[in-house]
Length: 291
Length: 290
Image (cartoon, rainbow over all chains, first blue to last red):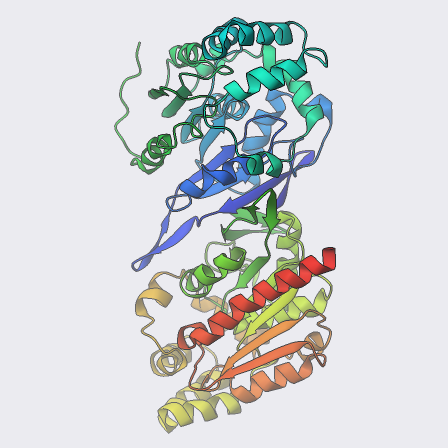
C-alpha cells in the first residue's frame, strides 16, 4: 500500500488483524507501527524477525520512511528528523490509527521518540531499540576498541574524522562486522532496498548532530528501552544517557550481554519483552515517575 | 483503520503482508479485497472461513462498505450499487492498491460485478460467490417452497412484494434459517454491526429493480464464479443468468450441490478453489510483468 501523507506518499505494509472474532463480539487488538533503522534501509529488516513475532497479538504496520525503500524519494531538503517525525502522526491520521504503539530501532527509535514527545495524545507506548539521545564518536570508538582491538578503534576513529572513500573500505571490512555477533544473513541484506544518497545525507549531517536529551524528557507514555551491551554504534553508555533523560515516563530499561546493534539478532529472546509490553493491560496503574 | 474515500471514511482491516521474504527478494503477493454480503451486514462474516484461508495466498483487505459496520453512514440516495462500486475503486486509489482481486458474496458479488464493469481494466481478477444480476422474486420463492414448504415461500413472497421492517422480521425468522446452513446467531448477528435500515432502504431504492447485466457484460477480468445449487437467496437460474451475461471465456463457473448461500461454510471445495484461483492469478500477474 502507498498512502498520501502531506507532500509525499509512504509505503505501508500491514500484517495481522485489527479486529478479531472473540466469541460473540469482535475484539480490538493493539496496533504496532514499526519504524526501521537507517534511514537509508527499509522496512524489510522487520519482516525477518520483529514483525512476524508480533502478528499473533497485534496489528503490525510496517512503513518505509520518507525517502526510503518503496516510499517516494521526495526531496533531500525534507530528509530531517522534524519531517520524519511529522510524517508518522500524519500517517496515523490518514489510516485513523488510534493510540498506536511505536517501535523503532536506532534512527527509527529517534523518530518514534520525537513523535511521542510531540504528540502525547497519539502514542500509547514506545519501544526504543538500540537508541541513544545523541551520537558520540568517543563512546563508539571505545566499544570498537573493546570488541576488535586497538586496530578497530583506530580505523573507526579515522573514518569518523574523515568519512569518505579513503576511510570507508577499512571501516566496512573491520568495523561493520563488529555491529553484531551474529552476522546479518546475506538474504536479509539483499532484500533491503538501500537509498545510499539518503544514508549519506543522514550520516554526514543530522546522524552525528542530533540531540534528543530535552525532548526525551517530554515523553509521557510507558516506554521499553532495549540495548545491546556490545553495540559499538548506539552504545550502552548512550542508551543509559537517554534513559536518564526520560524523567517524565515510566521506563523499563533492559540491556543484554553479548548483544550488538539491533538487539534481536544477537538476543532473539528479547522479543518476549516486547510481546509482554504490547500485551500489558492498557489501564496499568502508572507509577510515579522518578522526581 | 479507517480511510477517507470521497466523502466518507471507510473501515478497513488488513491481514497478511503484501511483501514477504523469499530468499534474497521480497515477493509481492496479490491483494484480495473482500466485499461483504448484505446489504446491511459488515466485514466480520469473512473473519472466519474465507479470510483466514485467503491470507495464506496473499494480503487480504476487509472493508465495510459505506453505510455499513464501522464505516460512515451516508446520504440514503448514495446507497446505490454504483456508489459502492466507485468506493471500491476509490479505496484502491487511496491505499495505492493496484490490480486487486475483488471477491464478493451475494450482495458483495453484485457490487464487485458492478465495479468490474465500470472499471474493466482495474481488477486483476474477480471471485463472485452467488453471483446475480437482479432479484427475481418468483425464482427465490420457488427455492424456499422446495426447501421449507409453501409457508416459507409465502413469507419470502411477502417480503419481496413489500420490503419493510415487519416483512423483513418475518423473513429473518422464517426464511433465513433456510438460506444459511449454520446457526448464525452468534457469528452473524452478534459479531456483525449490522443495519436493517440499510437493507430495507436499498431494496426500496433500487434493489427490486436493479439489473447489472450490462455491467457484467463489460467485465474483462478473469472470474471465478461459485454458487450453491440450494441457495434460495440466489437461485441457480439467477447465478447462471449472471454468468451468461459476462463475456465468453472469462468465467470459470462451479456449482455445488447441496450448498446454500453460506457457500464457503457448505463447501470446503469452494474455499480451496478460491485459494487456488488466487495463486493462479498471482502467477499470471507475474508472467504479465516479466
